[in-house]
Structures are given as structure tokens and as C-alpha cells.
Image (cartoon, rainbow, N blue to C red; front, side):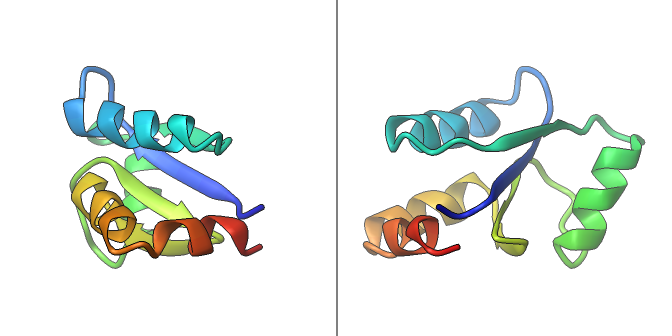
Length: 86
């Protein structure tokens, strides 16, 4: 199973949607609380190549983007393959 990490903030509807999708798939993930100005947010920005929005999602240390990107992978039928790797 792939290692999944997600950088989030409280009350973020996009973060909630992404976590719900992963949960429905039975995927365990590490969640990093990353409010503005925090070390976790800076790590997310650095790891994602400069993206400043949340969520930022990583599968096996590869930045896949945010909620919309996660759902695009799901619609394209590519998410399961990424999640099974590892």
C-alpha cells in the first residue's frame, strides 16, 4: 500500500472532501495540520513545488496536488493504481 500524506487546515471543505474520498477507499493517511505560517505549511509548499493551497496530497512522496487533482485522478481511473503502488 502506498504512503499517503495530506496537509490540511481546520474547516477546509476541500480537505474534508479529499479525506472522505480516501476514507471511502479504505486508505490510511497521515494528516498534517498546516495553518498559514506554520512549519507544516512551509513543508507542504516546499514539497509541492510552490503550491500554497490546501489540501496538498502526496502519494509515496510524489506531489499529486489538491482535492480537484485527487478527484481528477479518480475520474480518470488512475487513483487506485497510485494507491496500490508502494
